[in-house]
Image 1 (cartoon, helix red, strand yellow):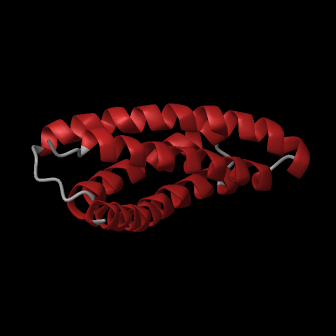
Image 2: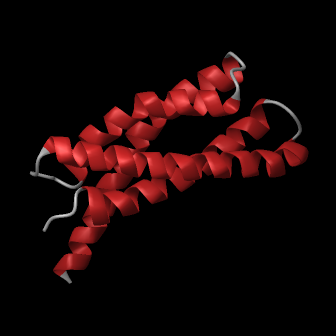
Image 3: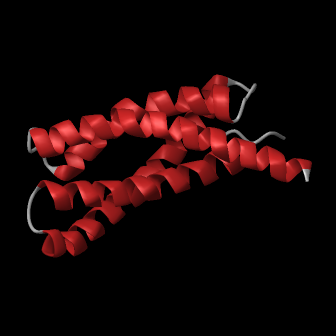
Length: 137
């Protein structure tokens, strides 16, 4: 029961940290994509370049309370983020192809596809962070 309570607390902290880092990243994405009409994939990449360091700091210190070497955890985190980002890009493209015809061209379809990609990224990052990046021996 204690393990379940700890896992629920960790998931709640991850959710809060995710809201913060996602809001930072999505603000960058929205300005670039919808505001400046930068290509969706490039806007998405810029958002993650800003949000990833925020996510690492919050995940290491607040969510997983990792006391191990920050360099090693940082390298694993970058690998986890790269995997999650790759999946994000696949979902972004597929969602754009599905949502574009449904919502029409322009910002609404782009932003809906961005959100689908971000959800994929978030779930993938949590699982990799919990079971690999910040795993305690």
